[in-house]
Image 1 (cartoon, rainbow, N blue to C red):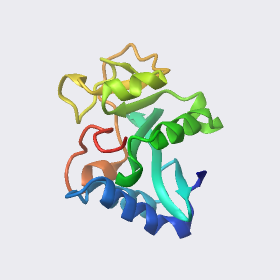
Image 2 (image 1 turned 90 degrees about the horizontal axis):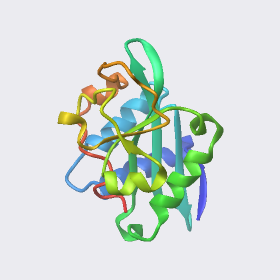
Image 3 (image 1 turned 180 degrees about the vertical axis):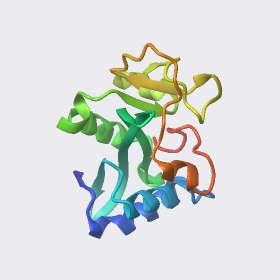
Image 4 (image 1 turned 135 degrees about the vertical axis):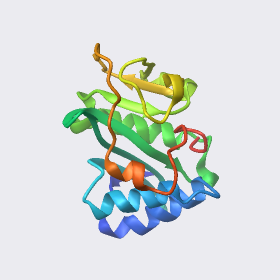
Length: 171
């Protein structure tokens, strides 16, 4: 398996992967296409095996008002035939070691049991607009002490439907 930055050549494969990893949902593929159209997300990588994109991870800006306060991890996906083989974990570990990621506060809406293995912890602040009571909202290196609703790139709100908890079909 080789991990590399997403390129123009791999974008179509990423969209196809997102549709396979989230059957019945166009949200994730539409979201990433909308982010690409605006030269976002901030950071993204793919895992490639035998010339096939088998996993994807993206980070986009998190906001406190108009100020960047960290990064959102979303979406993350693994091809169904490679789930539960450690591919997603390896891709996430790789991403967490990269210079633009390793010192930033990170936020993820996902399965606490999965993301806690990587140092993410449940957080009550900031407030996630997509998760009632922040039940599935986790953070890493978060020092927030004031209450505010964390902002996402506008594309998260304009895609087909609100995001679901990350992690459901990725491992």
